[in-house]
Length: 286
Image (cartoon, rainbow, N blue to C red; front, side, top):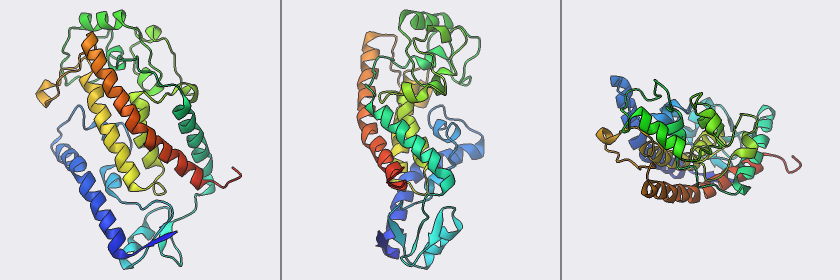
């Protein structure tokens, strides 16, 4: 247990807000004008964590906040007043099953051999031989027939259910894996871009026990991954300042894999921190 004085924890809170505000402010400005962004809006729309919740600072477990201003947290679910100060409560019984499952899920993902050969074909499979596209406001940089030819010419091996479920009906049989929600724990692997973006989801779902610096770290990683995800897609995002990663070429696939390996390296310590948090929240005999 560490007790933080008002000056200590307010400085940490201010630093967190300063870090996340450049991510949040443009989103709020666009939303007020009804403007969409094909890359940056994804983390706020796909993941159900409001900008205000991303901005809210949490110390995480093992810290008690002192001072009158800390009483704000008594109005935030998960906080209690103790003789040490205001701190997060012990994990409620109703949350234990989820934390147990998540700890096992993250650990099994971390232990699995990474696969770097998917080359981001999931976005291509989502428009394969279809008259509709998921991001209708963005033009394709290849014709539908050229997109189909790329998918037909490369092996499709997507292990992430939440990507696979958006494949077109024609693309689904082409996938060497057929992930389901139930099979996710045995298929999720640590090189998958979506699995590493999902670290943000698991971090904010663990609030207020998860410290905000870890939530911000996972958001930043997810934001960078999302950029690669869309640059490697068949969409033309040059008007938004994004040059393509042309995975239809050997050079583009090599560039994609290099970035994928770098993201996997960044994700590893964040996944380990989440695993440790799950372990710390549960009694030793669980």
